[in-house]
Length: 378
Image (cartoon, rainbow, N blue to C red; front, top):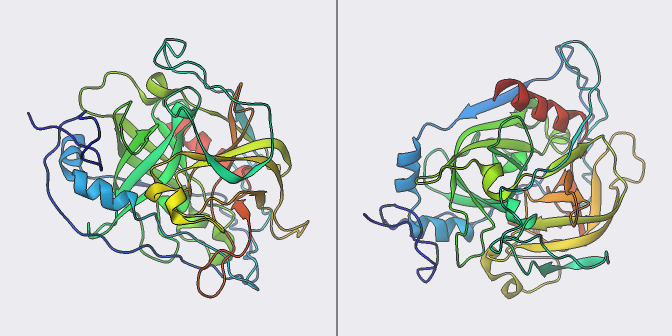
């Protein structure tokens, strides 16, 4: 039987796959410009979904070592913001069928047997401001075992991409939280496809195997909304299934982070995680083409200083392309809860980062609608 090799041919052999060589397109940064905030849709919220057509066996064959290498070096296009084009995400109410506003929160779930020698509770130092991202020392330990990388392609299968993502608590034990721009292009290309999730990816090993995507879930404010409103809905979910030879669900394997989707912007001692390939005022060599799981720590704040049309949040963190989709979370050392998602940065006219702020959509009503959709349908 042939074996699944990692992007680096020196990585440990784990799962079956066939080998082929392909090329990949370059990374693109897509700016979003603002206009007047659109009126609310009287029909209420719409969750949009997309089924991945390849079977798990076909996905196993599709993701050759060469495609994984090229996807790792090609982060998904990000919806970055240029000066003078502040997005107006709006504070419109997302309504449920009964007309009630919604918020949601949940505690995390640790993996089965996480106290064994292979996966002890991850040690974290006392909270300290870390705006220059640092490498996570033990990615396989709970709770960072739940953070990983998504690999996917465009529909034409001519370009391969990567993002960061996290196993999240839902009624499905196989749900992955990420940015919506890692699921559906922000500038018209539609849904991406051919997803696999590798939790605790280290660039040299695949410690928990891989999980194959079967369904993508996003809000229509991202998939079909006007450009200014997309910045308020840059979050989504991938439903996965265990890869070949795996019997445990994703949450049983690596755990699942909880969430706090209450629409807040100010948090103390928050952490952001991701797999950046570059950063603000940092040499790319610091990131090894996104092979390192990195983190920042600090406080989050309103990204627009009280602008009633913009309810995003931000934190000081230099992580760039590739960190998209990674979690912003609180209580990571004890009981991690996602309250934001790495989304975008401010860039100049040449798409260079201009400050050290990492932005997230507000996680309140849209985030809750996504969670409840999964709970009702999986």
